[in-house]
Length: 223
Image (cartoon, rainbow, N blue to C red; front, side):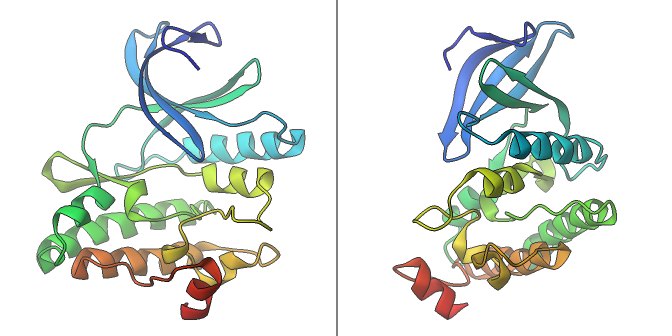
């Protein structure tokens, strides 16, 4: 992707905000509605058509989640070989950055207020049978007034369908993953998110991750 490219004849990429294992995030302009948005471009080259179709279905369901604690998805589309999500542009800091700034943990009152918002947002998603699968501090944004926004609903499921988990690649952040997520053949449900929320709570209150290890097998043993 390059700055200035227009996706689907509508979204102009203005500035790269970040790049990671699940693609790139851009600040972009919606030329049709004249508004600034965030676009996450996902790696779709070589992805099975079934995985892309499943992702679109799940993303459409996630886009229907109307909750103040969940980042709004405006659109899902493709451009050439690029699959992308159009989302509200958020300005704030993620919980991973916040916990790094508080190595001894947050005050209990502040931590519990944040956790209550995350739990409320997850309850809304779970009521509609939507499971996040990758709840972790980096996927929770904190806006002005400590307002919570959960990011990336639906993306972890797409990654599961397009990534070979037999090597070093693994979907989710191991320190926050429920035991069933270490086995690709074991189904996950809303309890997977609640387990991860417990890990987030531990880090917010103590400043430390719930589990640490040098390798994924060691971490699985610890879990």
